[in-house]
Length: 338
Image 1 (cartoon, rainbow, N blue to C red):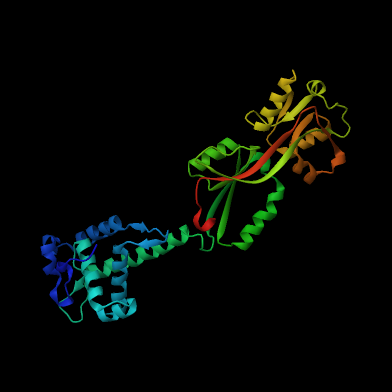
Image 2 (tube, helix red, strand yellow):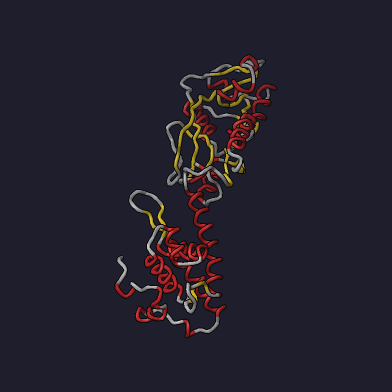
């Protein structure tokens, strides 16, 4: 809002003339320590940000007034501060008076010419510098244009936690040395819960093809893969549901959508899998399959990336067609960590 005529005060007018604006006089409290405590609390309370239609983060008036106080202290005069901020001396004067009004205390000693900061003003100056430093850090944290920095907490669903992640993780930390990664492996539903609780920033999870994470989580599908039924190369299981219903299975524990899909398809054919092992780790599942302990259900990319295809045999019973998606899931924007 426009500044009222009563606020059009010049330096020589003095702070006490602003009492008609219902500014609390410092005479009500002679304790400098108490005034400082009240002033600091008011600074913290009034410290707000507003977002314009352009989406740019703009400083609230109080922050601008604090900047004027800092420039006044560095320049040593109203005129010097006006030169540094490219404003008129009267504009700087109004800003300082407005800051004093907001804090309810005098910050300048006007008994000398040019005015200078009093004891309380010097202490407020120290806090003002700290607040502006924190404000700039906050802007960098929220800005996509800033150099990525800070802690990035990544969740990995058990099927995706494998050794091939080492290289891309090293590439990220090598390119962005100010980013520190924290990795956590867990079940997909638990990762969703951690995302919603703010304990994770992003998570890489498998999803049924065509599905997304539950709202308000945001889903970005980055890959799809076929899921295969496999047995060891020396196995003699035929690729039909009847044969598959008579042999032991090595599967993920209950709660896995791949396992649920397999059980559903076998059930429609009148059979159910005999569970011999429930293991989250795909490498251990593969080892069991290769040893002949049982048949398994594994992603095609994992099979191709870890062994030659002649060490396992792919079994495809009638109408079996199972795919999965790999998705990056998050709650919202990551700012400088985008």
